[in-house]
Image (cartoon, rainbow, N blue to C red; front, side, top):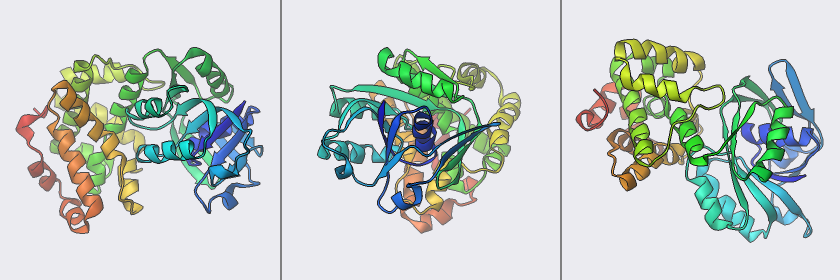
Length: 348
């Protein structure tokens, strides 16, 4: 099995490293300058008491390094959602030959873009639910081994299922790719945008009743969009999304907030969510447009109002571009409340 893995972050090493350890011929495409840190090293995947490692992989920084006769069984895409168009351009310009794409990205729109760009390839979806942290240049740790969802054409998915099962990553196959990806995206909304905007930990966010109401509203907006679009919430590996959403709909905040605080904020501790990390790295781009923003776009198409997700998307984009706006919101939750029109949402 030959695999081209685009991206060598935590998710890229999890998927590509697992495949290489199982005997696949894996080539990692990395940014220029990164190859010297990876070539000749050992990829290590620390998963609870188990250690999966391999030295059998290749590293390139441009697709022109591929041989003309290279023909890949799979392309793994393990970069941020905002890089999807660039990846498509690279694959097209590089005339890369492949049979299937495994999309490991967050968000719900990447698979459609890939299918439009490569109609003859099998487009497979993956949702990594486990918590992964990077320990070094080629070393990662599975902090919470929940599992990984897979969806797509059976004959293309099964070999990958076997690889991930053999490396203890708890894969599960889903028949409805959109339901899986949307359910995963909803899970990514929890304590993400608010933490990034306010520079507050998830625990701090959930400790305040007013901020909890904003958190709850963005989730219920997303679920309403799914329902109107004919998509069902599904349980993800190690993450019971269906009962979670059910309780969010029926339980009063006085009971719900302590439960979610323990589940969401307590589970993360003081570790900050991805939006905050992106901002602190100085990035001018964010996945907010592909998570909260995707809820807004789908809501517009389905006729479902999404004012809270719209506000969170707009505000976070503003603070990425303007330091003064960032300071206006940093540790100022009252300012966030003022900006969001509470009466037009699921905040009750």
